[in-house]
Amino acid sequence: MILYSIVPPELVFQNFEQENCQRVIDRNGILLLVTDEGTGWGKILRIISTNPADFLNEQYQPGKKIFLGG
Image 1 (spheres, rainbow, N blue to C red):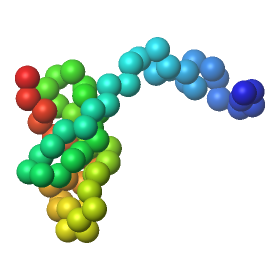
Image 2 (tube, rainbow, N blue to C red):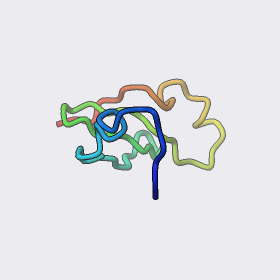
Image 3 (cartoon, rainbow, N blue to C red):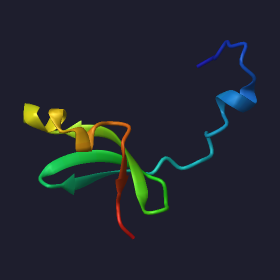
């Protein structure tokens, strides 16, 4: 693949070497895909559910910080 861009390569590949730690957790019966920031906190990326009410719960909206423990 060739990437043609006016953006410097340092910006394009700035997080390329970092390991993207994603994991699935269960909170109150709702599966959530989160990023593990290594500090005990993570960010919700996705809700994995077939229940429409789970997507309306503001506590588990994508982008919110969540305590993972540890």
